[in-house]
Each structure stands twice: as structure tokens, then as C-alpha cells.
Image (cartoon, rainbow, N blue to C red; front, side, top):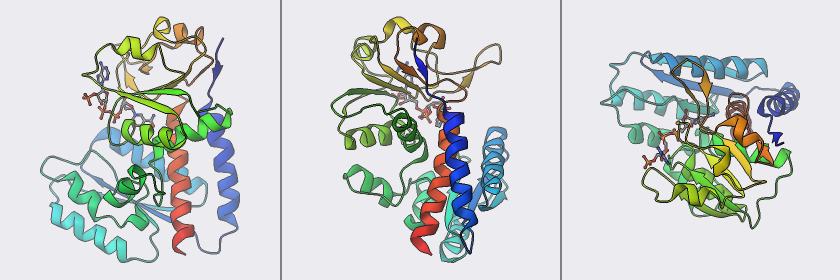
Length: 278
Ligand code: NAP
């Protein structure tokens, strides 16, 4: 029976340490989150980030713009925040409405305040094997979780399913930096099942329930990033938990695995940027 990779427990531990550290700071870190439009899921995410930030002593502000704000106005605000010495971390909640270029907006954030690690400077550093100002939150959280359970990565075959800019691609690079041998899969991958069967470490970030226990290599480590509601409204991941529990050595649940670690990384990144710039 696999050991559960408990993201909730690790979140509490890390955030409690972080809260103590922040208490000792004379000035407090400030995180500004920009939300454009009324996307209900985005609103929940943004409010949750604010709630967690405030709980541990990070000042946080949500700037909510209407859907019809222009790209220029948005970039003007980001430039103001870049100049504001009291703001240490800036996050633009994605997705942005049609008509606003995600890359133009993200590119406007100063790399020194880029709490998601998504600006070209930080991504460029990451993909050239150098240290970015901060690492993207979800893959960073996954590595924290694997490290907590002393899971060896060096020399292991890590299979990453999904190649998005926020999860799959940075995850693959960060595993490579930890000396894993990495295969990246996506919707055009042939023989996905065969590749999954060879994974010592399987990270799945797809958003569809595509992985069953019988597809796994016995004893592998499974990290399920996917999260979606099934037809009965139940929160599910990419991996069939019950059947995989019997085959894997470690498995992260959904919910309670990667999700809590993503928000934890956001808080850690806010404090890192604050420390670097004060
Ligand atoms: P995304 O941008 O939609 O990317 C999904 C990836 O899955 C794409 O690369 C796609 O391939 C691939 N894919 C789709 N169907 C596939 C299939 N049948 N076989 C193999 N690969 C397939 O999604 P994302 O933003 O990375 O998010 C992925 C999931 O993780 C979502 O459920 C999201 O909600 C969740 N998520 C969770 C957290 C968290 O903190 N827990 C954070 C971020 C994301 P192509 O590139 O070929 O289209």
C-alpha cells in the first residue's frame, strides 16, 4: 500500500515556520494580486491566496479590474507597482480575457517582483540551467513534497505528462536539474501507456482522469497535479487513486496533495523576493 504524499500537513508545517520568520521582520512583505474580470474560479483562487497570505503576516492586496480594461492600462498599473518600493511581489491571475495578450502583461512584471516565476527573464534562467529569482509555484511545491518524503530523484526516470508553461515544462526542467532522466508526454505522444510503465516518478498534469493503477510501474512515485470536477461534481485528479494506491510506493491525493503545496510556494516566493529586495 502506497504512502500518501500529504500536502496539507506539509503546508501547515512550512507556513507555521514562515509565519514565525515574518513576525521577526520589521517591515512586512507585500503581495499584490491583479484579477481581471469576474471568472468565478479565479476569484476563489485569488481570495484564497489573500486569506493565506494574511494568516501568516504577508500584506496582500487584490486589484480587481473589469473585463474591458485595456492592455495598456493594465501594463501601466504593473509599471507603477514595479516602481513602488513597498510592493515586493506581483501576481497576475490567469487566464486573462480575450484581447489582452498574456505574454505582454507577464513581460511587464519586473523579474524582481515576479512571484510566479513566469517572466522571460526567470523562465530563461530556469531553462538555461541557472537560478531564477524564484521557481514556478506548482513544480516548486512538488519538489518540496518529494523532498519531505526523502524521495530520491537522481538517476530516476521521471515521466511528466502535460507540457504547459505553468506545470509540465518547468517541472521537467527542475527534475532535470535534480539529475533525473526526464520524458515529457502530451496529447500527441504515441504509446503513452508504455512510457508511463517505465516511470519511476510519474507527474501527471493533464486535467483528465487518464491513469489507472495497472498502467503504473510497481513501486513508482505518483504525483497527481490534475484537478477537475467529474460528472457527479466530485473533485478528481488525473490518476485513479484506489487502483494506484495498491501499485505505487507513494501517491499524492486530489485534493490535499499538490494544491496546498502550490499556495505554500507562492508564500515562500513572496518572502524570497522580499528578502532579496529589502
Ligand atoms: P493545460 O495547459 O490544459 O495542459 C494540459 C496538458 O495535458 C497539455 O500539455 C496537453 O497536451 C496534455 N494532455 C491533454 N490530454 C492528454 C492526453 N490524453 N494524454 C496526454 N497528455 C494530454 O493544463 P495545466 O494548466 O498544465 O493544468 C493541468 C491540470 O493541472 C489541470 O487539471 C489543472 O487544473 C491542474 N493544476 C493544478 C494545480 C495545483 O496547484 N493543484 C496547479 C496548476 C494546474 P498538448 O500540449 O498536446 O495539448
